[in-house]
Length: 301
Ligand code: CP
Ligand code: NVA
Image (tube, rainbow, N blue to C red; front, side, top):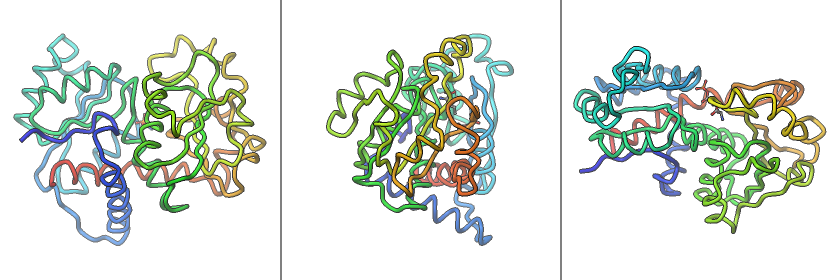
């Protein structure tokens, strides 16, 4: 039987997305209470990182350990990937040795190729196009603090990047309204916008876009691989900082989320991200719980 993958959120049904969020919260409680949950005893996860990571690497490694399994870190610098071994061959070999493969890479096509040639589940740990694992954690965080997001208004402020594309997928699956505000030339995938016109819109003015939002989310102005564009982007995104003034236009109980790492004074002010009631640290922690739920779902069901 072909394995299930998480190449993007489009690999999940709405019910499965909710199920994962619910299970993530259960696993969080079990960990806090010291309840054993070694559901992946002796299972192993290969993790290919072609880009840097703090949260993704640590949450997958710690998560596998807590589930009774183990993980293996691979980077191009110290594997044959860096010497040109095809991704398809890597998928064929790894999937004969491990129970799942996580990949953080540039092209979404690398994720697709790995999945095509792997006989075990492949998880997208971020590509230039999508970051589905972060959305599991973001939605878990929203549900834990505010309940179901269905019908709510969510505002994405800033770059139409991998996170923004994943917010569009989440809007479709969880049935929320998504308003995107970005400078001209920094829009998310056009096909995603076109396929989700019923719930996703583009509003150029950030103040107008965040009005009444129950959730405001943002991300860095230059993603990994775009470092050379930083100077230009600082100019283009100057009006897209999430400040206390901007948040004041959202709903009075609006949550602010940021996948991290953050650049204070660029996409978000220190006052917003470091507020006493900021949930971004819990959002980061939820990567651990959400991915444990995902691993359990992909490997045990
Ligand atoms: N949010 C996120 O994916 O963080 P890392 O780049 O540290 O993994
Ligand atoms: N958009 C960012 C997310 C980092 C977690 C990037 O791709 O670098």
